[in-house]
Image 1: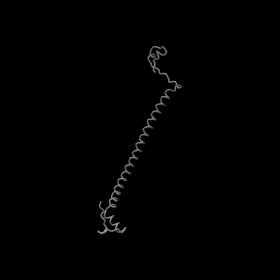
Image 2 (image 1 turned 135 degrees about the vertical axis):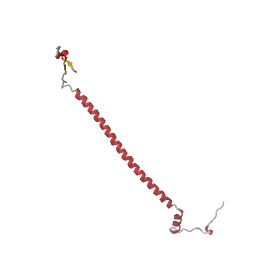
Image 3 (image 1 turned 45 degrees about the horizontal axis):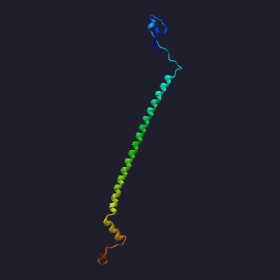
Image 4 (image 1 turned 90 degrees about the horizontal axis):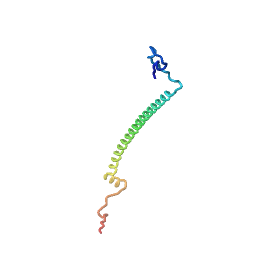
Length: 116
């Protein structure tokens, strides 16, 4: 907004080639509104960035805990499979039948063959 003195006041000579600047009108608040708008936009960008980082970190912890729970369940499943195989072993079932339930193998005379 520099203007030469010669143009402004119609003066020629040594002072005519010098530039003068006009002062900004202090009642004009456009620069303040512009600066405030830029600050609000920058603040919003910072808030969105921080929110995104917090969300990524929280989801990372959730994934980590889900993986730990999955590992624990896989280990428990393995233990249950071993226990299931032990419980359905024929030797164990026969021992329970004879000792606790007092069952015995049938004799030849106790077997009845049914034919059609």
